[in-house]
Amino acid sequence: MTAPTDRAAGAGHQERDAVHDDLCARTATDLVAGYRDGSLSPVEVADAVLARIERLDPLVNAYCLVDPESARRDAAASAERWRRGEPCGLLDGVPVSVKDLLLTRGWPTLRGSLSTDPGAPCDQDAPSVARLREHGAVLVGKTTTPEFGWKGVTDSPRTGVTRNPWDVARTSGGSSGGSAAAVGAGLAPLSVGTDGGGSVRIPAAFCGIFGLKPTYGRIPLYPASPFGTLAHAGPMSRTVTDAALMMDVLCGADDRDWSALPPQEGDFRAELDEGVRGLRVAYSPTLAGAPVDPEVAARVRHAVDVLAGLGAEVEEAEPGFTDPVEAYHTLWFSGAAKVVEHLSPERFEQLDPGLQEVCRQGASMSALDYLGAVDVRMALGVLMGRFHRTYDLLVTPVLPGTAFEAGHEVPPAGGLTRWTGWTPFTYPFNLTQQPAASVPCGVAADGLPVGVQLVAARHRDGLVLRASHALFEALAAEGTVSAAPVTPRA
Image 1 (cartoon, rainbow, N blue to C red):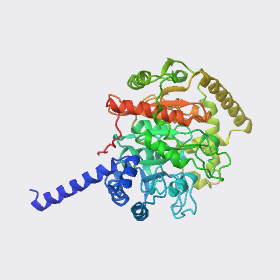
Image 2: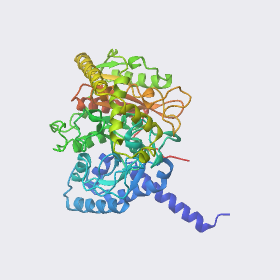
Image 3: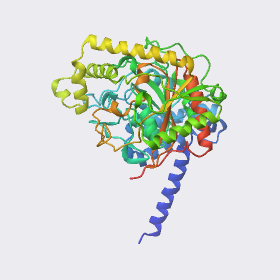
Image 4: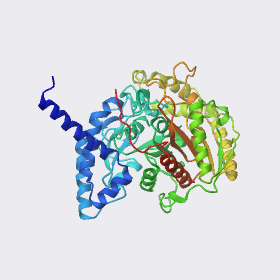
């Protein structure tokens, strides 16, 4: 029999958890509004997020580092700024996580690898992290990644398997899987991920959140990725409004990135409500002939119908390219080989076995192989440039299926060998550097989320956000999607 005092203590814990969960369900936009009118405090929000991480992260393994002391210190400083009426930026007091491929001052960058030194905190921030600090964000911790971000799921020799908050037996996707799981589970409303072949959009789709890969160079990167100009940084959030808010923070100039675009004029939130009426939309249900699960196809088709109902001019049309996977492999695998070229043979043997195989392939490629892949890439870019003369947006599934079993690089029993075999909708637009987003568009019969991909011409990041916002809000109004976080259960 449970003693009365035990029952009272249990009820007290449940009540406290409910309060914390309510705060963790707020969007970043809501939090800033609450700080402004005095109804919320950055300290109570940070405490709630840290408590929810302590309670739920053991189930999903989204974080490889959490720093409660630093987060509470930053939250207290933010609370004082708000008390004085002097917030220092757009995200002052908002908890944010950072993928563990991005340098973060005072914390180690482990990159999911046993070959990195956990006792070596760095003395500088990546550009996106520096912008977060300038805007007063409360940095909670760093999120998990597969080793060096090499694949489309998130497990690594150093941090183990990261799981999907919708079903912890399933993968969160990758390589920004820790960020997606953290946002999806309400373990901080915002995260910064990276995307070299779908690494923001894949886990966003699997975990039922919004993720944007902006035009290459829109968010500066430093140090430069060994995967070259395939790699983008991007915001991950539960709503498109929050992602636009992040973009207004992250797109500041940084002279350490020689390939960065000029700073954006105006702000991304200003045009969010302009809608999609009159936009020319190409709907490609099976890009380059890729097979799609009927459940996914149905949810994406519904999203396309919603866009048409909002006034977009929708036509079923293919861009007309063949799968560029071999060119992508040449660029990606040679980049992976570059990442590990400094390792001793003993250290190399500690790498993820799949990464070892990819690196060996990459090391065998010649300069002519690489330049041939660049030719394919440039031709694809020209083709998509012409395509967008006719169509403002291309709409496709993000992925051909829902999240599969955790701990596998490819769906078991699917006959595939590499992660690129089940991501044919994402990596082509890293080759072309176009902005592309994953918008949650409902849940399949297996209870797992589905994402629809919106792609625009280079530099049209605002258009992708605007269309994504119109679609998300319409789907939310009909009850198809929700901005509420999910609570993972064992």
